[in-house]
Length: 451
Ligand code: NAP
Image 1 (cartoon, rainbow, N blue to C red):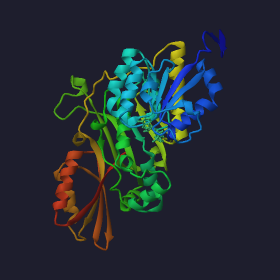
Image 2 (image 1 turned 45 degrees about the vertical axis):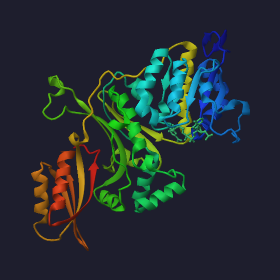
Image 3 (image 1 turned 180 degrees about the horizontal axis):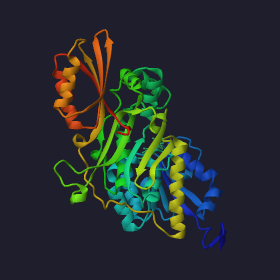
Image 4 (image 1 turned 60 degrees about the vertical axis):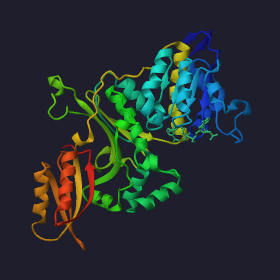
């Protein structure tokens, strides 16, 4: 018997075996923390966490760990008898999906940071965990070090979450913040981000919003107790954002951010409302949008992430911090690992997948948003009336109009009240046909206003 804190527990010298899959940015830090903080971790868990092996692709690289711990045979490692917990930080869908499944089926609890995998296969993996009564933890899959998965699953499990809005991709936030600060265009800023290591050589997953969409799917699933996959998320990236967009945003007291938005929306048009036997729906979307400079998310700059959660009783909560990087992400992984180890040691289970609500996903065309429409028009009388007429004809109500002269004519910036995406799209198509409109320079959504 050993004293652990003020509790006396049995068997606390019996080690809990840990296998780590992947020793890249995150895995290296997980292994470092496991070794450097072994004594503290032992005290916190109640038993020693012992690293049994690390799966990598390349055995020739010196990684500062004993060679006998390294293996390319991840399949054997995850089902070894002396392994109780598996940390998956290799990334990608295959072989991670099969390895996590095999580990869970063998009764090993799994901690993963793999948002791409979870966005599509949480259902499958959670079912495997349920069958063998193992744990599946994934705090690090959304917003790196920032605790947001556990607050949604646990702290807010007695509340009703209405909306989650986040900046969940550091690369795009770095680029948009730099464009806002310097006035430089997208391509130049992307090059600088790549040079500084904030963007990968192939930046597509980040700049086109795929990474944020995977995280939005995970956040929406947790917030609304509904299975949401990446394919359910409406997605637009930032590669079409121009220096002029940032400039016109600044002129109306806004900046541009890539937002992941998950929210409850009313039942579809013509359908009974939630109070009349119909079902409310959820909207899950990722796109660049203007937000007022006084909105808390507008102050989130550089590679930082933040998530705002609005719950009926808790009100507005904001989570902010480092959304990526080896050590910050490993911090979240280690928090999960300690939880999984404590469950092994004391008994207990991680909460399973909760998808009982099964809320339908509203198509983007039904989702009301405010818009910021930038038009190049002929500089003559009657133009404003013609433009306003098209908005009215399509049922899109105008909030403000700003007109500026320019060498090529005049620039009109129209900000609307909330309008359906489909009505706005019809308005824009009609505006483009007007003889007095030279071009529709940009159409951006406006989020975070009280209206
Ligand atoms: P990484 O630097 O590319 O490292 C991947 C590691 O996995 C490498 O050690 C690689 O081995 C190993 N690996 C890949 N395929 C393998 C295979 N088939 N068999 C055995 N080993 C394999 O990746 P990372 O940046 O650490 O990211 C890991 C995971 O964390 C991803 O799911 C990512 O989305 C997630 N994540 C990362 C961050 C971040 O800031 N990096 C933040 C949040 C979440 P070799 O070393 O031999 O090539």
